[in-house]
View 1 (spheres, rainbow, N blue to C red):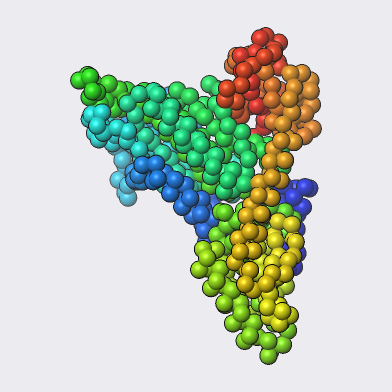
View 2: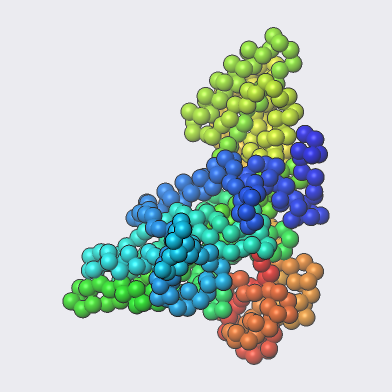
Length: 480
């Protein structure tokens, strides 16, 4: 594969350029004519579908259902929840005209769906028997990210899921928030092999309008954090303005409690940055659209039909065993070209079948993660492929966990805090007094924000900035 087609930037030297080349040359996405937007290509959409299918199955197993709500939201609905509205106003796209006619009320292109959904919930929820109401939506939202866009990471339109649930009590809502947070953790760590820190957002960083926000934070190779997903207890902050009430078992009317939660295709950006190398993508097997690709190797015309038949037989075996396989029988490309292309696309495992393999009744397995090769007898191809894929999954997660662990610096010395962020980045685990003034000053002076406040971790020390007794243990970092 020529330099023009292959990756020309080194990950360690220029992560931003390397990332952009991975996205476009591995055919995940392309740039749209409008600034801030991107086109999701079939391979990129297949990767998103893998994420969606896994998480959608988990939701349905726990009683959640999918629905769909309008793209356009009347401005009057957004204004019903003033804090939420003011938080999103700078990012909103507005529709002001329909054809040649000016609209009597501006319509927002949804930046998130709380307001349009809760307007419907106010009509659907009547009694305690209607609760919990557990609805999820797969859609796209638009936010005006025009100036500094990057595919999958920060774009004006992005695909995501947003869950919106209604409950009878704070206790039930708390359980929902933590259930979904755990589902997210399993998706991100067990499927994408991206380790995360979980905890609460600070009051300053929580979702606008939420009672509290829980989060999952990952660390990238350049020392910056990515927020992978959030799960919010919205309290009664939306049910009161939208009049979501229910008749309780006690015969009295009560305002409901609501939760919301979401992840986006930003998950793909973390997967690219964390696992990819200078040859292209590296996709964990459990989330890979293609888990193994079979490449026949012909040396002379007489070999072709025999090798083709053997390759087809192996493909059938793997497919019947539930392995997502691809038989690359394109005659217009050489085996070497195919090797490079599938490495670029991050397919976890390659199976080579040449004349000697047919003669010895074997196949050759080549791993994407560490380039290791192994000859496997025909009768073991399914079992060895499964074993190898699980080993690749474990290896990628272990390597990523080592990166996360190495990125954490424990310090209550502000000079070291600033020096570490300046020189290597990563998470800084420090005591914090809980005061917004200290949080703001740290952000101004270092560019770092509180990414998460660890669950059930007692503070024992003094605030890293002001020296007052600490009330929280926080993880600070610069972020995307």
